[in-house]
Length: 311
Image (tube, rainbow, N blue to C red; front, side):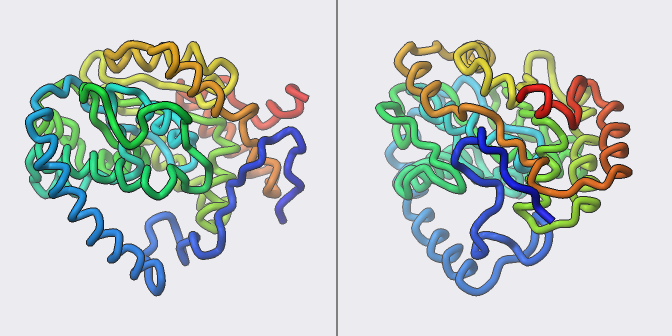
């Protein structure tokens, strides 16, 4: 049974409307009205892709970095992707999922056109999913200089790397420019609870699903070239957004534009969402999460009692 939400949390949710919940598991097939929406989206974006490719193809040769998120569903990387997409020199699509495109052998120009089309579509529908990702006065839906192109769908990339360890090598060969891989992590108790709530999985299945991803991300140091990977804690972004945004800009090789930094800081959550409080945790499962998290350096310092200490 879910427990009451913490009154200090911002007004947002980890539980989606029923129509947004797949019938079983994070990768369940979609049907009914969702299938019709997907088909309509496909037709609309196909037109956007063709128009984008014709309009911006000459700019694609000037792209300097390709940004691809790695990590876990419900970890907080959507807000990071939205903030980067608001930068005047970056276009980061919201969950295009470049994995099947790269594996199928698409061209660089087609990949970039699809990313720009997806970003345009998401902006036209209001830069919203389960949260309002609009950054007023900034560059979502357009760009000044196309220096960074990327996609935010960390869970799909991580699952792909588990099956295709050569995926990053294929991507490097395709784009021919340096990769930049933001790895966003969140307290595992919050992340697992959010997966359980969002995908209607049991806590036990959510724990297994989460640590399957951790098994792959633990290998990122060996899969990535030097300078490609940056691990960012969601809680650090919330606590000190300006510092983390400046760090991200240095990582991507773009300037931390003052107006962009200020406007982005205004939309960052006031506090993390403590999703762990919304589900009932058996003591044995809490101990299992703590044990398994202890095996990963990028989860060091996280524990269940963090919320109580912060109150």
